[in-house]
Image (cartoon, rainbow, N blue to C red; front, top):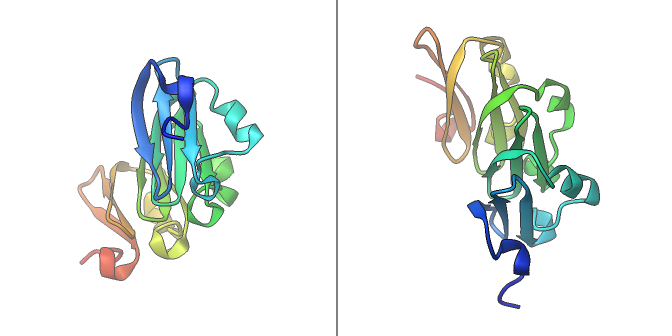
Length: 171
């Protein structure tokens, strides 16, 4: 069918983002509507769909997964678990989030206390353990390429991680 999401998208959509094979729309009432390939986030689990029913501030996506930043600073992820659709061990640290960046298959979230939390494919930036000490605080902003992240600290220093060929090792 041409209008897969139907009347849910007829009025009041403020933003749309997509993975390689699915879309998510943020409605004016702070709820999220999804459609497309379930593996790429087009059909979240019932539990996730319930959480997306209200209180969403903004949406982010990479090629395989979505993240919703909630009004309370928490995040909800869905889509391919390997590429960031499951926050895994990062769940306990994902609170008071103010910004999210993404690579092709990972996410990085900036907390209000200036710490950075990552999840998703390790080689695409989801594993920041090599620089974790430098990401525990003092980060002002996060940037990304297709497979690496860079964090700008309050002192003007840049810390990077992810795939080396895509900027994962700062000069």
